[in-house]
Image (tube, rainbow, N blue to C red; front, side):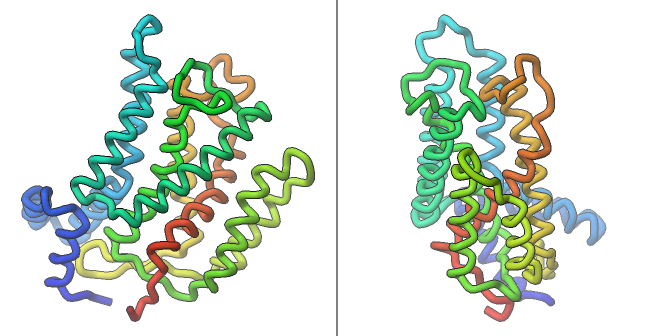
Length: 289
């Protein structure tokens, strides 16, 4: 399946923002010197990196602040991260890297994530070991932006790759699944952990869904479940960066050790919550639209 190249050029300008159009053209000129399959692979990687820009910046800030921050500095590291995240979000809007509607949904996910963080910290699931002024119940407010990064990536990836879907389930069913997943993160502390039922539900509901995405002028496809597994794996890696820098710690992490693979499953499920929230403003489009 192919798309109109002129349409792709117009869409690309919207995807990168008008301020970065010269850079986009320079990259495209460089890719023309590569063999076709290699050029498409490189372009796919560049687009993925561009889609997760917010998350990459935040992870970079976790590493840099851990390396340079001193305990006697007048501003707490967590508070500085919170201010930096606010500035980044403002710049994304100012440079049209995110739309206002996307930012609203990402803010909702920020709130949803923060509420869960407060509960989980109170239950002893993990801890933030440093001090902060901007915090609620021992949870620094920058932490909500770590969830917002996931929402930002999804909203931007759908737009950047011009994603279309086949066999997409009814919207109401996806909302029910997202609510059930979110509630299970709370309920399992008091009752049965039904995550295995939820894993099965994601396959039942989304197992036939294909994501069609445009890298250059040719549309490729991937099963949505595979995309969720791969994204969950990258989030698990990001989780390890967070604990390696001591930004948050799980029980038994007095000395660093890899985060349990169970967290990979948690992120896999949480991705569906994020995805459904993003579809509130970016409804999944059929392949024919």
